[in-house]
Length: 519
Image (cartoon, one colour):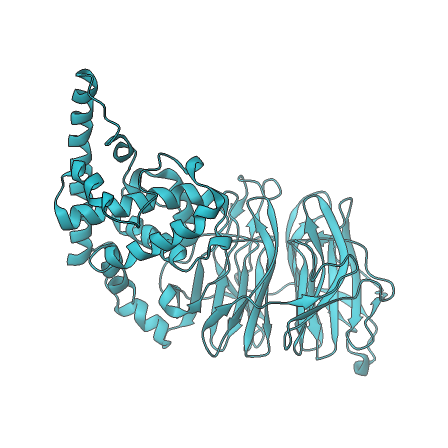
């Protein structure tokens, strides 16, 4: 039995990568995982975030390098291939906008230095949605992809010592051309599963390629494998991760338009057992993460680490563990109380929220009387714009991306998790890492927490908030009516003040109950 357990801030130090899909997450030996690139809201990324496995630390290394155009490293991209050989991560191709890329890079993860290798010999044609795998400790094999005009079925071998690419000549029957598939080296064979084929159909065929090991002196050739058991449905954008004597397939999407909202997205776990040579469903003891494609799933000891992905509407930034039954993380899930049963601290937080809503309704009535009598309401008008978290659509949408699922308004437990996950995200953010679209929700939550703090400590008289703030140098952004009144040099100050508010609020607010539920 295995369990899916959502990772929380307490599992890691440092700042995890921002949400994305179409990225790569490459294990470097047993010491670290390197996340590169991806796509977020039509923006292609080129950042590097590293997970130090031993120290449970996420960090962003300062990379050096000098590309052909003077850039430090690869340009922003998604749907590229990335494979590690020793401490080196090799990157080829991908997509940026509607342009397919054909450049070739290597990152030395010992010194965090990029080197562009595009000028070394004849490279494969530009492509995205290809798949690649390491052959032993020296070579890389890449198969298929999409070049913008046609689906590909070519096989290339890279020698990482000579840095030469060679197209492999394969005789006999060939798999249909495809992209969005997986290619996994298992001992002497390359196993290719699924993908989207020429003309658009999504496939569920499994092929094995021999002749990749020079010492074997085998003639390169493809064989279609038809294995018994519960085989996966047709899909692309899935992952296949090697773990012991089996391969674990997770997620992907099938049918409908390419990356359209009408596709069917999957969150099933299917094992290809190499000992019995059959497909099996992995027994899972709880609900899986939200269905998705173009995510990453990496193997760490007996655990798997899931990050990111896309479901046709949302780009995910959640992190999940898939662990066996005896794992300490599984015990944390099994022994924790159900998340939809709030403890006393959560109930206290909900009571404060209820008081806040009631006071706001009373203040609305006062404001209407002021307007009817011709009395200025300039002091109270900013307060009228403060809305509860559950009614702040932008705020909840941002939190939904982090938590990895849509949040129904009637699920208070999940709503509390979403709120606190987003606040924890801002607690760990730097001014330069906050996108412009987050500033509006951040400003409103800043104002909301100030009001909430005043309510918790000084009663529910909203009209006294202005006098309470007037004697303070901090909280200078409380009176702003909207984010357009912020200047760019205000962002560091706003974030600093926001972080000061959080410990005051969280000491007796929703986060305390939230942490007790999930740890």
